[in-house]
Length: 302
Image (tube, rainbow, N blue to C red; front, side):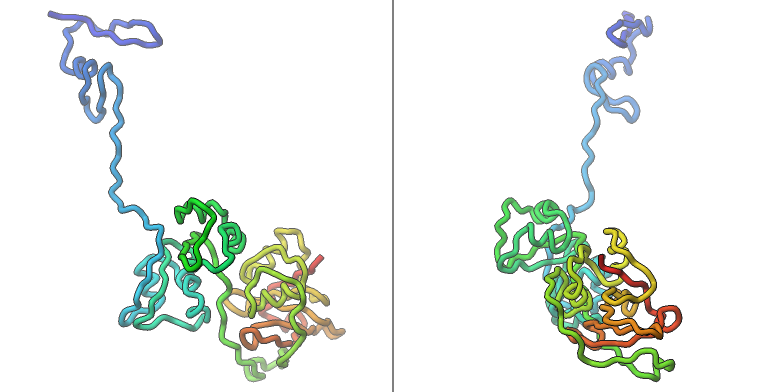
């Protein structure tokens, strides 16, 4: 017996066909599959639940023992983590840019690029978030924390965070490498100033921030010019007394404090970690236009 198939559109019954109901009509009425579309009764489309095929990403750091022939580069590739993230997560032993791992070392490996932090007395989610310049919620969510009570010695992963500057070997200064005699280095110099700051002691950034009050940015020395411009501090190419000199003298940059500018265009800079970590020294540099090729610019504190 034949019967018409009907459908509805906007509440109105529309006669589709007087032909006998076929298999597809029954499927659309009672449920089933038509081509690649799965439907339920009364033509309700059913969307299948997709099943993930990849293993879930770990949120926990791991302790890894270095094997024969391995180094930071190979371990970085093995875990698809940046070398810097591994250095920051093991800063005590890998803070020097020339240091590397050796067979038998046990090191912390973060599951993502960032920093593995060992909780110390007084640490809170808020203080860690402020120090590493990330949102507190990032720390809570990634580490599945349900309270702000951190346990001393526990390991946390702070994804996307950057640690302190790495130490660099003291450069060897000689007139053989500076034939124009434009750099004169003398050990010693003004002691650190009295301004507290968020930079790590022993580095050029800490020293300059101790001499200049209220530096609002954070980061490697090479980022300081952009940091200053972002908050409206004046910058330029000419040395001034009290200015911050920014240079490209390492892969993370270098900063110093301008003590004096002389009539011939030379100027005296005080700095830390140029002769060695934690060491304050002074240099007399040539005119910026042609005798200071590593110069990136100056920041003039307001």
